[in-house]
Image (cartoon, rainbow, N blue to C red):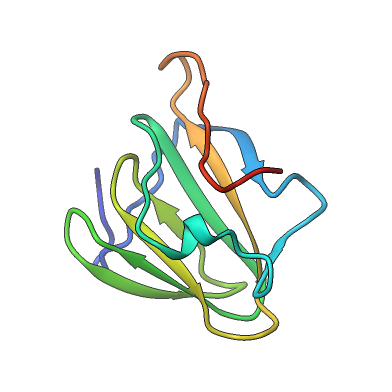
Length: 119
């Protein structure tokens, strides 16, 4: 995996989006961030995530392979590397965001239960 100078992973160019939480048309807010996202968690092997903030600010902490902390906003997206521990925290009361899930085509069936992320 390639990382930027700030430690943020770089999304591979060949991935395709297959899902997002919450579903299209809705967003997580400071009041509705699932508790599972506020503590350390991972995506499955082969599953990349993209955190898109539409308003406000969100802190995105990457714990592996090395620790880095990022402030996400409407200009800065967060990229989640497969299987690497990470977590988020709302920094402003007006924060709104979605998490998209991406994977490389042909890497297997997507059958992923995301704990605490009921849609």
